Image 1: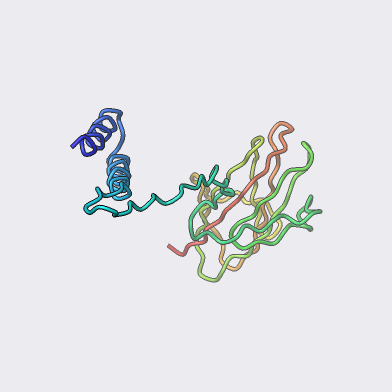
Image 2: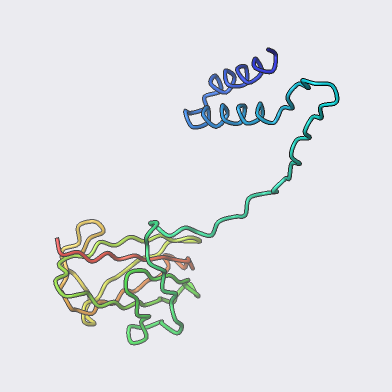
Length: 182
């Protein structure tokens, strides 16, 4: 009787602690699992009690590498140095990753849009500082309609993007583009 009261008490304390439904379910499952490993009472003289399975401490969980922005996101193309001017821009398809080496330098990336593309949405993230992104089409500064992080574009055109650290920052960056025909 006492063995069954302890799991109920544990579950009640977990419920009062602000735990969510999944936490309560896991706590309930752990308690059910421990009752399965309790040795049964000996029913006959000379009966043996099975010993519980040995416990192994797995240690700390391994740290996961930085996750891509989406589960099905393609691999990030690493910048290829030197790429400090438009003529040496690193070619990429949808994702470009790199690091600004010096506070006054810039990295360049290049992508060509597939036929039928009418707009491109883009996202970026930086660590270790801030960066600015400037887009160019066929070598000329792009000054088109840019509401937020979306560009109306010319299909089959080659675009370059300049990534520069703000105020001398030297961030690591990731730029992702998503072409669309909608």
